[in-house]
Image (tube, rainbow, N blue to C red; front, side):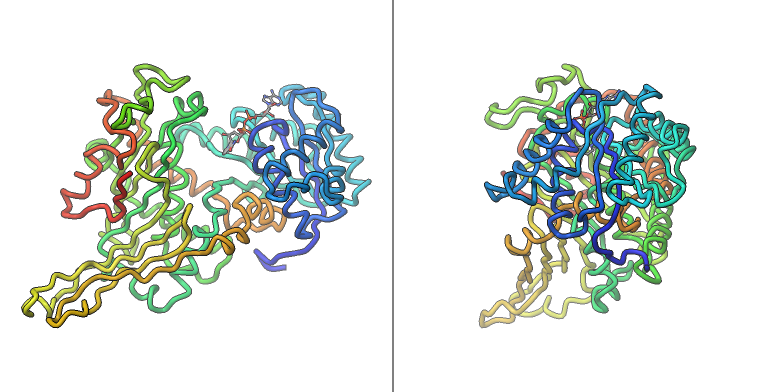
Length: 502
Ligand code: NAD
């Protein structure tokens, strides 16, 4: 079986640590159900949910059914025969991850279910828990012999993967003592998004686009991950993270690697990983001075109508918080085909609009033959925009004759937007990623070398910022961030292509 080839009806035991948590409820149970509906999981699978709460199997079944109902659109989804059958594969084991004896109980249950459901020793351990537990769990899985010697054993872990390179290394060493790199599936859910996976198809599936994707034609690349909401109920976590760690180190740098990597020889996990690692190693690591020049931080204040709280007055935040809710930066690549093309990145909370989009801005024509015509037309730059979410699609800005008597030229957009019906058919990121993990396909998971290099890139920014207090808050909620983010491009005689007003 080739990498990435889909198999039907897999046999596997899922052991979900953090089975009573938010991630399991909102993402994992609904995704597993969708895989069951589609036949990727059939009779030969079982799930053990573990957490500290003393739940019974019956209660666990109810929780799983409610999770499916909350996710679904059909009102009778929970009561369907299929949902009942699905939930009957779930088992709950009360478990404290620090207690060695609990792993013995877990192993006995796992072995029993292996025999009952014909699981062939295939196990997927999903750590839907705080990362501080990862090392303890991985170590116990090995020492208490949950890891089977027939069948496969795969460990799926969630972000955040460390707080900086050193803590990421420590975490990686801890899990690597029990699992090899090939057995570790690091989730970056952006890599599960259809529109992110489509970047490779766009670049390497089109002669026209592929041949323009280089420093001869591209002026700059812009990536925006904008959220309109504030910190909501995540202040506890956010106060320890901030936008740089929460969004730039993982999602944004993964997108940068997909946009700037050289062409893989084939679309396989190993080829893609090598090209992505290479792309990240081609991103310049700044000195502290360069970091200050090329990165801007922000924290939201109230909105213009004083109706929304500023970050420092949100529940659970520090009244003098130095945590950034906005980051903009300019990255430089030394990749052979894109060297010298600046990559501007931006992410933040409480911005004008929720949208993730990428703009590839092409160079000005060397010569404008219309410049001397009666209308003295200026030509707009060609821009290729990739809409990632919530909208999914593409827009290409080109110049055409304006339709007037004189030879005026004006820009138009060639637009493609996925319809709601088509979007609804696209599997959700977690569904795709769990399916890939079942398949043993690591194409859309982050390799350790990618994670480590991404930390090297952001660590210098973090450390430089941590040495001096910022003048926060510095942007009005509902705008696109602080003035300094505009200045970052203005000084290069450029502007952000995406510039919504609320
Ligand atoms: P949560 O707080 O809702 O759940 C944590 C789970 O861990 C609970 O089931 C809890 O009972 C269990 N737990 C805690 N201490 C334990 C112990 N000593 N022994 C056994 N079980 C214990 O957290 P969550 O939101 O589900 O997030 C889980 C992980 O996923 C975190 O690393 C988080 O950063 C990451 N994550 C979550 C989301 C999300 O949408 N919730 C998104 C991305 C990443």
